[in-house]
Image (cartoon, rainbow, N blue to C red; front, top):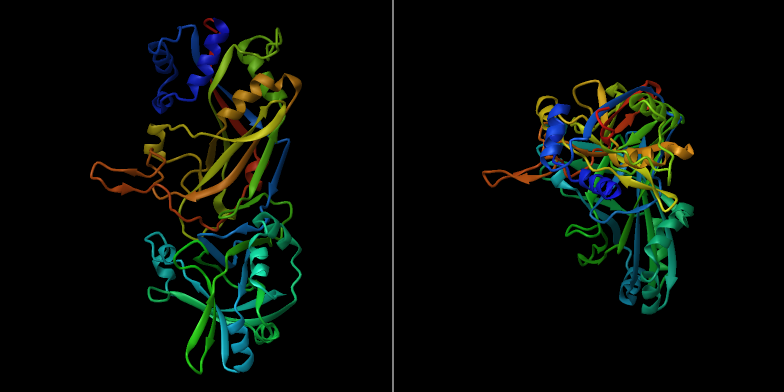
Length: 464
């Protein structure tokens, strides 16, 4: 019966109403009792201060990614953003035409992501944007002779293509300068392709594969465009000025490649808009000692299978000192910090993303505690899944590991729904901005200062 109840309680804790965390501990205990949970199961809190990481490390997500709905080109927050387009086509008439015509203009057309720039959240005083940007355009060109050649390119697995981009070695390259403009009327950026590329294509006859890489390492910002799976997808055009006709070839896939240009290699900097991660690790001894002192006996309990099942973690949160002064953002909005914990799964560690429980009264008065670029000097992150698993397994001396990322900008930091919802007036209330902010945030000072772990524990230890 005891084991059944503990399993029930552990599962039930996942679905507890957020309102219990708005309450004092005695009220929380009454609430549990109202649900038929014996009064011997009390909810107690334990704060463990002065915790410092055993290790902390940033992992830059530099692997090439598909850019399906939107693409980014330029440089911002010490990160460069390149684009690679993959095009394959069979068109013998086209190759015949460009061989006999001198007045051919080829260019890449990118459609500006206007929903981002014209949103109410984009700083109005930033528009219009206009900048002369030096681009480096490099390419790989493969000759084909039939439709089957094009089919073979399409059959190349996307993962293989992305992996090969890490070993990019261009056939040739050229620099050009374009004017990038963004305003209410600007819609398309046309990038003229180098004459050297057109000359190489004139040597072909029936089919080709073109991989085109565009870089803007000296840009003052990153610009956003539509990706290949949208109505305003990128196009490669060849225009014949004599008769004003043109041929259009659409890239069937596009990759987004990021390069970290941070000068401090030891700084714990996360970038928004890409999947950087900060992994922090804590040794078990201080947490186990605090639990032993709290309960007055050795912790964890080591009889039987060794799992200490005399309690379950209903809520766990880690609080860090926060300093926004070393960060930067594009939109001036608070940004959520997303959390995951490393838990045991059949003897191996897996990362499990944490489910966020709400403290409605705190949110209404101060806003969500898991944000940077906001009021206050602390950052509180929930690590319930991780601590629940860790406490039951830390007898073997394992460490507690957690992961942080920068998430979406928050439009309504004091809205406790924490998701977009329909109001009583049938209007949609947006809590998060639908575009990432290409921000940077330095967690170095936060990890150097002691943090505090607070646990809410439902236990069966009499009146202790």
